[in-house]
Image 1 (cartoon, rainbow, N blue to C red):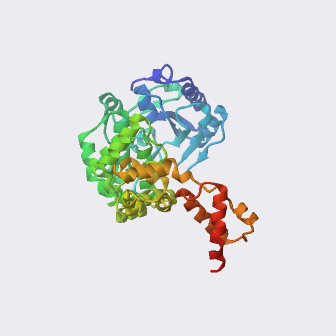
Image 2: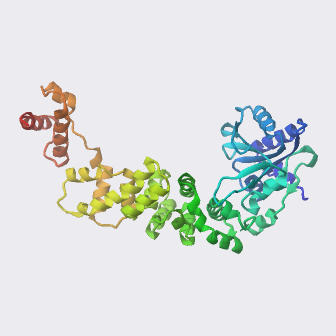
Image 3: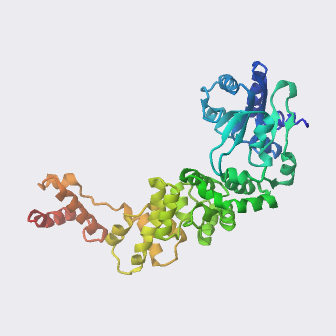
Length: 424
């Protein structure tokens, strides 16, 4: 068993060393703790000399007591327990790469059926590592004083890190948890690793099980892809291997959308707002496809707006190519469309006259408002009620089209139109 203690000392930042040293001290204070390990991605990243993110600690023994002592020693709030024998410590204020420290009870996992949540049982560090997704994430470094820095690596993850290879732990891994297919794509792209040929074949064979994931789980995976810094490469890989289509039969990401995401990323103009990314990624879906995607993802209102906004705009956007379209008509069409969808059409849509109209709406027209207010109309003797709103709408359209140019002209227009409302 090799010793990699230098990863915990000279290769770690001061903030991480503080956590590791505190774990070492606490591990010797409990009679009901047999061993403590830092596991998973932190070990992989330390080997690669990459800045780690969230810290995962596996405890053979009393994980609850250990997590409480660790939180106390770090001077943060008590950990929050989950249903999977996990205790999450909020580490936002600790200046670590991630936002949390997860302390888990070393355990085994079994799956009653494909894509089900796991059934767990307290077990050894070896079993705890075997339940993980890929060999590169199935390593542990001991934080116990007696064998500080010893590497536990039952699947030769260290060798796969050196080979820059993503390799799944067992043949049924993607069937047990199809979200691991998404993780393989993210790790390969993020780390610049290749996917082992057998692993790649198993991923393809397991795509049908993605359909068994709940809408929430599938939506979370798509959000994670969109939130990655190398999102375009991940989306392209997912599209090519059929993973995007496996998420929803109506979902596809066109080559032009990927080109736009690439280009905006290079120029530094790509929005990180989820609604903007969704609108670009789903650009080109027809109404039926958009509806199916929203239903499959059990999408919240914000998601639905970005996706269906594209299809709503597509129904009317040809009208914007008319040379004589009035600004008020433009506003009538576009005020009903989410801004993310308008931005997506500007970026991904064809360079027809409509693009200039869309840009003009976004940069100037949508900000035009009457100088006249409802209070002004009431002061002029117009009774309160729906009439006020209707008159303001008339004035706004007139201002957009250049028919009134001052507050006085706006007031005169409203007063001239008033009799028509009073006689209705």
